[in-house]
Every structure is written in C-alpha cells, then in structure tokens.
Length: 357
Image (cartoon, rainbow, N blue to C red):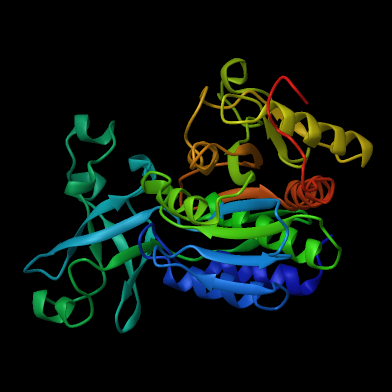
C-alpha cells in the first residue's frame, strides 16, 4: 500500500479546489509534491503542471491526469444577497439543491449552500423533475447585495465542499476524484520511476480544463511532443443497481485498474501493457470504452503533431460528477504499478506503428 507521505498527498490533492479554468490551488499542491523527486518541475501558461525525469532521452513518454474538477461560477448577485451561477463542466442537476459549496474569492474560501424553493411550496409537477440551475441560488448568509458583494464577486469560481474521507480500509470518498485520482496516479508513477532508471524521458502532467474540452492536454502534449502518451482518468464502476453492463461492461471497485480498448488506444502499446500486466501479475479489468473515441485526454494526445501512441488507464468510480464520488485504493495502486512497469519496458527505438511490431 501507499506510504504515509503519499496518502497525505492524496488527501491534500482531494481537499483543494480547482474547477476548470481555476486550478491554481490544485496546481500548487501538485507542483510542491513533484518538486520532491522530479528533476524539473514547472507550470505552463495554460496551468498544466509538468514534472520531468531523465529529460535527455530521445524517447519521450507523457503521463496525463487532469486535476480540474466540475463546479460553478457566479454570474449575478441579487438584491437579497443571493448568488446566481452557471455550471463549469457537466453537472448532474438532480444532486445540486441543498449541496454545500465554497466560493473561491480573492479574500479566501466563502462557505455557502445551494438553495431552492421549499418542497412544500412547489407544485406537484415541480416535485418530479430536476430544477434548472437558473432557478437555484447560492446562499452565503449575506444580509443584502452590498454584504454579499463585499465578500465575493461576479466571476468567482465555486467548488463543491471538500469532503475527503476513508470509507473502510480500502475506499475513499471525495468530491473531485474525477480526475484528481488520475493526477495522483501519474504523480505516484513518476515518484516510483524516479527511484529506478527508466530508459525514457518521462513527463508527468497534471492537466487543466479537461472538463471543458480536453484543453490542457492539447496544449501540453503539443509542447512536449511525446512518442508515447498515457492518460489516467476515471471510468464508470458498474457494480451498483441499474447500470447497463451490456452497454458499458462489468467494472468493479477493488478489482484493479481498467485497460481501455478503442480507437484512442494504440494496439501495439495496448499489447505491451497487457503483456506487462500478465508478467508482473498485476490484476486489471478490461473495457471497450464508453465511446468509440473521445471523452478523455487520450484522444487529443493521440492526435498531437504527427500522432502519438496512446493508452488510457482508468480507475473505477462510483457516482461520477456528483459531490461525493468513491474510488478504491487497490485500483489506484494497481494503476501505479502497471504504468511504472510498462514505462520501464519502453526504450528508445521502440516502434508503435500498428501492423509491423
């Protein structure tokens, strides 16, 4: 299992806030941790944070885990001191009312709750459908508009309340595990590789703005120009009621990281990953992917410059895009082992051109 320092980093990463486009807090935590073992660490103009080891090797391997999270942004302050807002990323409207939030203001974190009209005052038809975000508001306890405007501003980002906690021996719950758990995996993989001697240059990237269209991975991959790219994201855990396994697959918490197989995944690299998993006895799960292509950083890394050999490794996740998501440390640890051993097997001159390996 992970050591205390790694678990402290995991908690710190989950406990900071960084909705897409507002990732400064998360970048600082990520950057500080990578600085303990990477040869070089920097944050680019987009907000991606990159840690590098063995930079002089001609074979460049990129690891990407996006550390932005879904959230909200203030659009208007009413005369009553209530904050109206829009979504940042895909929001499940059914779980929004009554949730606790944190406004990321210039003066620090301002706590609030998302309010709505009481159920007693709703019409029957209103009770049976999701409330539109435009009909909700954030209440920070302000007495009026002047009071609210003294604490927050239009344009301030809003994050779900930090709530990291262990559930039993192996499982964690937190907002934003999508995909700060992936950022944790790539950071831990770089740490493991820093203790060994990989033949490749390894670029570990905490990417930004994935939830708004894979923007950070697109910029960072262009700058790095890797030959090989691994993205680590979450995938749907289907071990809960009413999830269609026939469409998505049989994916379970605690049964290992998930190896994807679709158009975003280079077949040569995919075979290498599976061979490593078998040789090192790393338990993994398989999926065809939620889509034939797209949806994760893998797809934009693959199409960078003249093309990149890419692979997606995923962590099973329950309750994705809600204020409380659940992952399993055994899957996370398995992903670190799988990526570490796979990258150790890559060397300069390796070809990933399909059909001639």
